[in-house]
Each structure stands twice: as structure tokens, then as C-alpha cells.
Length: 498
Ligand code: HEM
Image 1 (cartoon, rainbow, N blue to C red):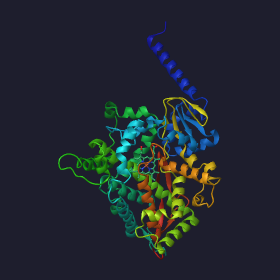
Image 2: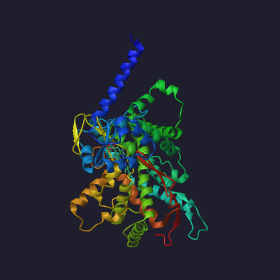
Image 3: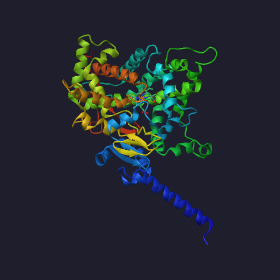
Image 4: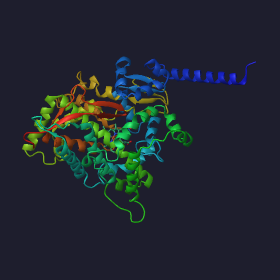
């Protein structure tokens, strides 16, 4: 006679084994590492190391255009497949991974909204603000904040050519001070003044960077996020206070509160635009707060890594500096440089494209799922499968960018008489850096490009930059966002600063 506990244990074991085998068989026709086919822990482990994107991209060499990275997750390195999956009005929508952006938040925001229809409705309310249509002084704000960075360098970080004065500067940190200052002023009408204070004023940068590894690791096992938000579980866990994040939330809340009720403040800024187009108080402060997370490390990475590639490629660095110098001396560039003027500097534009191509600021999994069976790269994808992009392989795709796709060579964007179709395809694939042209395309692409157009001209016309530690130039990790630190540089004033 078998006892009840033993019967229950056997039933549970049978269920677990059958469930594991069924999950394994669902995508058995898709190649991938064996542990990934059996358990999500393999993906979670690699995500926690901070080198997931690089690790996964090496798999495409072994397994081809589509491969399995967890029992219900596949990844594709095909730009064409991503174009199809991300396209607006398609059957795909965001996977549960995006719930990490809703962690501890009462309502969904543009970053966490998974329902395509609701996302489109929310986007319509936010677009006039994000596009700058409803915002006064957009360009002046960016000019002021770039100038703060220039003044910070002049005040504290200028080394002398003769070596008597040596003041190394962590460009990774200072670039983010500038992007935080821009986005805080644009988003909530209150600049955080990180450049003026030469510190992360609210202490939020360190906290977000510190909590990202855990968040993105839990995001691949979504039930853990729900568990962590359960009040009983919360009560049992040690209390970790993200004071900087809380203080920033407070600022976002108080700025939003001013825009409602009697005596409300009406301003032509992004928050004002969101309210004008129908966002309630909670959504207004959450969208505002979300911008600080979405908009500071991303643009900072584009600045840091483009500068890193330039400093490691003296030929390209010199060419860009000569282009800027010529434009200044011929009066084609004013002080500060205007967006339209920077757009007419072809080598600058090529450098920016190349920097973001080689180090895409967003390289997270960005999974999409579908309720019906689909075919991707000629392979059957059952409903409910997370399909992710292999960002690194896509941006280094040799079919698209040529045999030297892994090399920083801005000239690839300037080839005269280049096959028009090939060039169009290169532009399209590079555009995926901002999610262009899908339903979830970056809402702040214009503003990010505006910052980049201005910052490189203003820095390179005044200063020379050199890597302090050429053998270990920068620490770079990817926790969905690409994060850098310790980009130590030596900055000197150019002999004939323009
Ligand atoms: C070089 C800088 C940037 C890059 C490369 C970048 C890249 C991206 C990418 C790839 C997406 C698509 C995500 C997805 O498919 O789910 C995205 C979405 C988004 N980005 Fe950016 N971003 C940058 C700067 C910014 C800035 C400065 C902000 C300011 C707040 C911002 C706000 C957003 C928002 C709100 C979305 C969600 C759009 C939607 O769901 O419709 N981004 N970004």
C-alpha cells in the first residue's frame, strides 16, 4: 500500500518531468546550447554576468540565424526578421520581460505597456511632447547643458601639454552628468545640475546601475518579479532603500502636482505637453520619471563609446577634427553649433552612426511574442515564444556592412557611387539602434541626436582627448542597457582652440 505523501510526491515529480519534456520538445527543432533548451537558469546566469549580448552573439556563429536561448525563448541575428517582427501593426507584441519596467509602479508607462492598442493610444498623447513640437527652447536647453560640460572640463580637468598639470577625467561619468542635466530639464523643467556640482546630484546614477543586474536577471524569469512585489514576501526581505531614486521620484511627483488643480502651472515643456494631451497625475509623473532612466545612460553610452572609438582610431579622430575646424573657419558652424549645421558635416554624421552601430546603447533582449504560430527565418515559431534580437550580430552583420563589419570605419557611410540598395539597407539596419521604424521606435531619437550633434563639435573644437589606460581603456557591461565606467581620459586645450 503506497502512502498518501508518497503518492503526492510521485504525482508532482511526474508533472514536473512531463512539463520539462513538453517544454523541451516545443522548440526542439531550433538549435542552441543544451542547458538553454532545458532551463531558463542558463539565460538568467548569462544575463547576470553583464556580458549577455556578447555571449549570445557568439552563438549565431555556431547555430545560424535563429537559435534557442531558453525553453521558451529564441533569438535571431537576421535584420530582415527583426524588421518583420518589430513592424507596426504586425501580430507581435511585447513579452512579459517588459514587466520589469513596471516594477512597483501603479500604472503602465510607455516603456512597460505591452498591449499594442493601449501602447498606440498612450504614444499619441506623448508624441507632441517628445517630438519637441509642444516644447519651447529645446535647442537652448541642450546648448546650455553642453556648455556646462565644457565649463566643467575647463574648471577642473584640463591637463597641460608639458605634463606639469595632470588631471585625468572619467569621461564615462561626465558624459552622463551632461545627459542627466539635459533630460531632467527637458522632462521636468528642473535641471539636476550634475555638471555644475560635478557629482550625481541625487545619487541615482549609481543606484540604477547597481540595481539593473538584478532587475534584468529577474526579468527573464518574470514570476520572480511578481513574487517580489507580493506584500508578504516584501515584509520578509531586507529593506533596501534607493534613496536617490526616491528623491528623484519626489521631484517628478511635485513637478507633476503643480500642473493640476487650482492655480495649476501651465508650461510649454514635456510635462506640460503630456498633461495637455490628457495624462492624469500618476501617469504624468511616472512618464516624467521614466525618462530619466531611459534617457541618461543611453545617450551617455553613445557619447562615451563614440569618443572611445575615435580615441582608438587616430585617423578618424584627425579627420573629424579637421572637418569641424574647416567648418568653423569657413563660418559654416556657429558657437554654439546649430543642429542643422552639424547635420551638414558628413564625417561627423558617419562617426555617430558608426559609434552607435558598434556599441548600441540598448542591447537588451526586447522580446516580442505572438498568439498565433509564425515563421521566422524559415523556422516554425509556436505561439507564446519570446523572439529576441541579437543586437551585436545584427549591427556587425557582414552581409549588410561588409567583411570589416566589426571595425570602426566611418568611411563606410561615405562611399561614393555605392550601390543604392545596399546603402539603403545599411541605413535601415543601423536605424534599428533606435528601434526604427517599428511600433516601439525610440520616442526621443530626435533629442538624443540633437545632443550628439552638439556635444562632439563643442568638445572637439576646443579640446584634445587621449586615453589614459590604452590597455584597459574602459569597463563596459551590458545589462540590457550598455553601461560603461572608468573611461579615463587626459584632456588638453587645443593649441588654437576654435
Ligand atoms: C542614443 C540614445 C538612445 C538610443 C540608442 C535609444 C534606443 C531605444 C530603443 C532601441 C528603443 C526601443 C525599445 C523597444 O523596442 O522596446 C527605445 C525606446 C524608447 N526610448 Fe530610447 N534611446 C535613446 C535615447 C533615449 C532618450 C534620451 C530618451 C528620453 C527619455 C528615450 C526614451 C525612450 C522611450 C520613452 C522609449 C519607448 C518608446 C515606445 O515604447 O514607444 N530614449 N529607445
